[in-house]
Image (cartoon, rainbow, N blue to C red; front, side, top):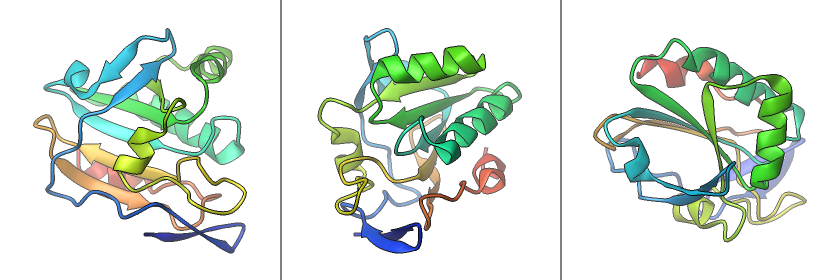
Length: 165
């Protein structure tokens, strides 16, 4: 279990992030058109998984904007923005912001992605949502970088994530 903070107050996650060098676990997440996405949909691509509590918070919105900007210049790379937000909220946000370079995926129904990857918040006011995490995966499905952001209100280290691509 990882110990992180929200406004300086300790909260916890359901486990530890997958290890660098391990394979990313397959997933079934919901796209904004309500279809199901799985890891095989992105076969042969490098992936940046931008995972966060809710697109309706300032820091989460900033990370989606930043990765959307970066995604347009990344060769053979797809940025997946994953939260427990409803697909409708994700679509509304990206539509209003004109963000077209990221793929929004929702883990709203069961939260299985968060539980499987040890990043679900287990206590405090955000319990049940995903913590702020970056996972980078190479084209073979091997994890090359992870970051569990220690203070949920802080942005991730974008440069470190993008440097491994």
